[in-house]
Image (cartoon, rainbow, N blue to C red; front, side, top):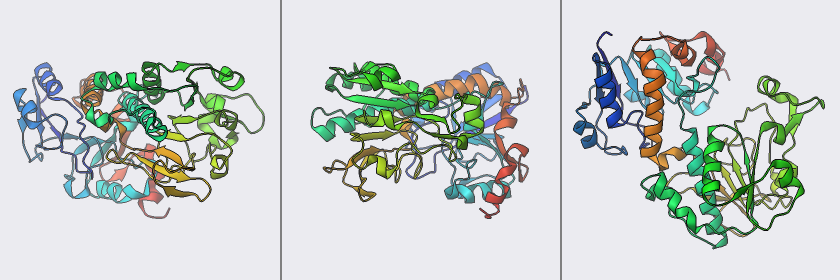
Amino acid sequence: MDLMKLGIVYETKTPPDRRVPLTPSQCRELMDRYSGLEIIVQPSEYRCYTDKEYTAEGVTLGEDLTGCVVLLGVKEVKIGSLVDQKTYLFFSHTAKKQPYNRGLLQAIIGKGIRLVDYEYLTDKDQVRVVAFGRWAGVVGAYNGLRAYGLRHGTFELRPATQCRDLEELKSELGKVEMDRVRIVITGGGRVAGGATEILDAAGIRQVEPQSYLDQTFDHAVYARLDPWHYTRRSDGSVFDFGHFVAHPGAYENSFIPYAVRTDMFVACHFWDPQSPVLLTRGDLSGNTPIGVIADISCDINGPISSTVRASTIADPFYGYDPGSGYETASFEKGSITVMAVDNLPGELPRDASADFGAAIMEHVIPELLGLKDTGMLARASIAENGRLTGTYAYLQDFLDGKE
């Protein structure tokens, strides 16, 4: 293997994210495993792992990363911090034509940067290989339970950010007291898996979707719904997941029968703008008993009308008045309490980073070092050599400001 310098950038997005793509011990393990690899870490006072923890593992700290071939971060890199002609890996939030990051994509093209977006790193079966999804589900469901306790004054959980790790967070769940509360989760991936992990740990029993619709219970329950539960073919044909992914506009909402029997909604689904809206303002205006919505998916002005903005780790809750469509105080009477933090894994950054870094070590580093080539990096490369790659050519009009 040829000598390669790999840099870990400090997070420049405001507020700064505390997660890291590789932990100190993972950096050490990689350098021991690959003799030609050197890792340089930009100093940061915000990271969940301190500069001293990196240096204790023999990792070099350095502000100047211009000698590095590949630069790894977590969230979007501030335009002024981008280094020309480098390969960057981070969550860019550009491939869905997010308008707030148009300038970032334009700068990446202008600087000849190869942008590899973590979100699109997939194996041969198109399954994502690195993600923080489990941790978003874990923290999002925990925050939802915390909101419910505060709203009803029945229990009070410590904020997730005050828990050192998952073990300490789960120890808080012994405080949860929920009698006959009905919770629904939408989605079936890693995010939903993290959410069910927390509800199970809180002692809330899972029931099948049909039982959720048909039965009453003398204890708290939750049901997890797949797309074929909360949507259906508009033409009456049998649901087909592949067809749903390819033609989301051919489907309509079938979520309302669940919503009218739900007290708390934990949204973990993937949503395409062409797919059905799940809860309109009208649906929420007196037609459902839902009082808490933990919108982990956090699609602003998307499938859930109450998600009018993202909330923050420091201030995770706000209220929504479905009558007026306006935001209110978090627990105002007659409003719905919304949790819509868009960087939830940042609340358990050490656990989330270690899990994420392990996936990078296994799947991504060998490809970056040229030890194997499964096409994974090419599939996730949005831009290279001053232009969009073929897979992402559909972004050209967005890039040019034409849409």
